[in-house]
Image 1 (cartoon, one colour):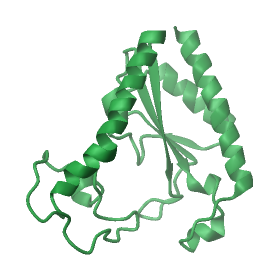
Image 2 (cartoon, rainbow, N blue to C red; image 1 turned 180 degrees about the vertical axis):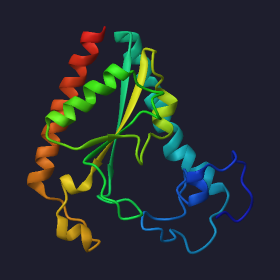
Image 3 (cartoon, one colour; image 1 turned 90 degrees about the horizontal axis):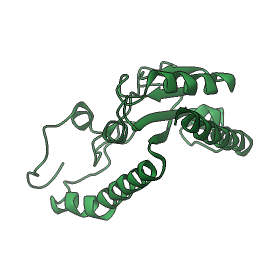
Image 4 (tube, rainbow, N blue to C red; image 1 turned 90 degrees about the vertical axis):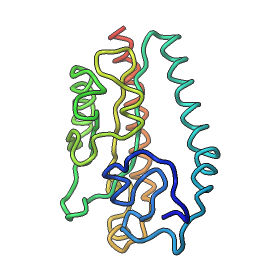
Length: 195
């Protein structure tokens, strides 16, 4: 992918598959670049976006933990309606890196919240959480984390998704926005009750 070798850790499965920190493939597995990138591009991108973002995130987590004695990081993503094998995915996929970043009682509470919203929820399949979830959460400690994947079919127009040109459904998106606001209030109450 680069014009000269770069200094990097042993490639993970995601990197080998083309979806690393600097991906080489799109979600549809199309190549993103038609030529090799200069090796300096790694440092440029890390310095421009990656490091400042992660420094800010670590600072915010430390501040919340100092102010409140605990912090729950919620890492929210969107996902396609189907996986690569065309299997229909749940409405919400929650990830805690296979039970390592979130206490079971909190996991159960979050599950119940989404089920009470009428949504189908699964844990860790196929998304178990990534770097942010692993790096900033550990079950049984004051710093925990959960990844939330929201199925795009909940807020995108069905016909447009199948045609490859997703279009936002304003009404559905508004409903999801309201639900996520309720989730935020619920999590604050959950964390306050646990303190």
